[in-house]
Length: 472
Figure 1 (cartoon, helix red, strand yellow):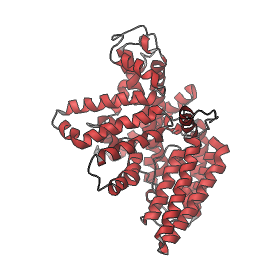
Figure 2 (cartoon, one colour; figure 1 turned 90 degrees about the horizontal axis):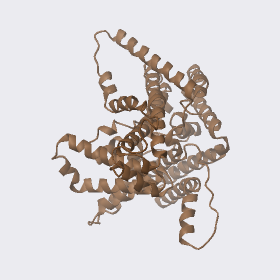
Figure 3 (spheres, one colour; figure 1 turned 180 degrees about the vertical axis):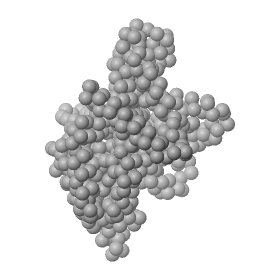
Figure 4 (spheres, one colour; figure 1 turned 120 degrees about the horizontal axis):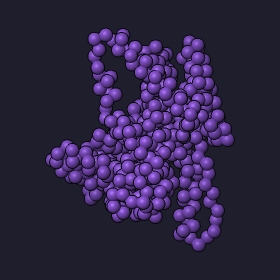
């Protein structure tokens, strides 16, 4: 059940909110949240519900056992329990997400014939696993106490706003909302507005531009010119951003309605002036996770290594970042591509960039990010050469297939609007100090109602597409 579906908007969400607001006590609200979240998961992925419950049990008990070992000052036992808990989580993730990929590698290296079938991914398994790992590591480090209340712990791990695509949260992010009654009318109002903005990003922009991008990438690269190739690539880059940031806006809006402040995940990444800045603004919860739990510990553990310590650590982290996105060589290459660029910037390139005009820094960043989306989008490595050749004019600016023949001219205005919305225009609107606040807020509410009506009309007419990052 996707956030952009009629079932969710007009059935699940109203029932969930009604039950949540009627109950006065925080503990009972958490029960409603847990039951609603489990129902949300079961609706979309009933066959993996036992796996979800098993994961909950493993991590809940692991946290208690590690806390007990810490309290009794038995660090070796605490570390052993932590390692076991991490391995169990990673084994579950690897079994479902990487088993087929690793099996293919084994078959290519060893002369054996073994079947390694691909398995359907459980809903939100990557986000669930990383949230669980952060909890286990925080409890082991002593930065967080294990949650004894199984209801609160379950609500943290499976709450439906962040279950499918994050943002990846640490327990400290949602703990205040689980323990205190924080729901108020202002938060609900702001949450509804943000949900509507996210819905519009997803339905009106991402789903529309996805059609244009898919048509370009489905065409034979030898039949398209540079103009069509660049438009298709830009449309795809905008699709990824508005699809994922749209989901994040909807998740944060839902969290606000329920009294939770979930972490931000995007901060206008396409205005960045370096690859380093881009990754500070893109999928911020994932970047923060890898920085906190992998990069910083690696830097500390290898602090005595003088030669290429930081570059190799950065490269390793981003190889794993690529692999997190998908079990494929293209994702591994995509991660290594950005890891190499980040390592170069960390070792002098970024200082050089600051000496050149801002516009060139911005163009440098956009060009490299767009090229990176080629490796991300084309899972078959053999297709890279043809598409990159089209981008850089192998067939000239125009070729056999044109925007008219692919029927994508209609999407140019949508792409222009999307590019403008990549600028912090909405942030500027929020900073407006109106002379008559009531009239200003009333006008904003009417705009949001109109946008919502347009989104619903679009969904009824065209249906909705699954969120792109749900597959990761």
